[in-house]
Length: 73
Image (cartoon, rainbow, N blue to C red; front, side):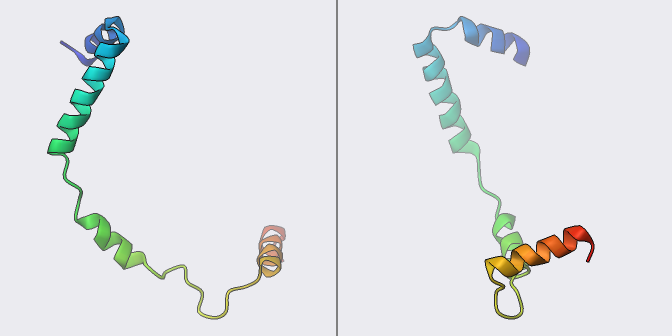
C-alpha cells in the first residue's frame, strides 16, 4: 500500500479510529526516536556570538542604528 492509498483509507475511518491510529503512530515514534546529542553541541558553539562587547544599546539607539543602516548613512 502506498502512502497516498493509506491517506485515502484514513479518511474513510471514523473519527475515533483516526484518533486511535494517531495515538498508535505517536507511540511508535516516541519509542524509536532518539534526540541527537549534537544539538547541544551546536548551541554551545554559537552561544554568545550575538552578545555585544559593551553596554547594550537602548531601544532608541537601536532604532537609530537600523534607520542609518537602511538609509545608507
